[in-house]
Length: 75
Image 1 (cartoon, helix red, strand yellow):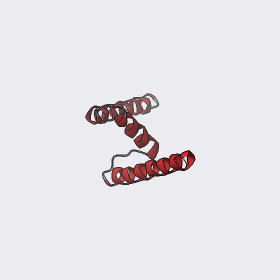
Image 2 (tube, helix red, strand yellow; image 1 turned 90 degrees about the vertical axis):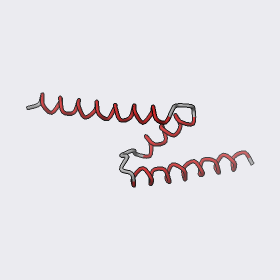
Image 3 (spheres, one colour; image 1 turned 135 degrees about the vertical axis):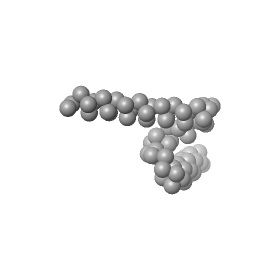
């Protein structure tokens, strides 16, 4: 049945995300399941994984800098 096949695919995808999230936690990547799912989808659609990792690192760095600026402005 098509509905059963879709359900099986969704369950397999969820299991894969859960496993990758556990690996992410072990490696202290600080990626939640939603972010991890987005990254997986982007990689499946052809985004270079190394380039994606670089972008994530840069966005985190910029986020920290903005937080520091906000904290400094509030003093």
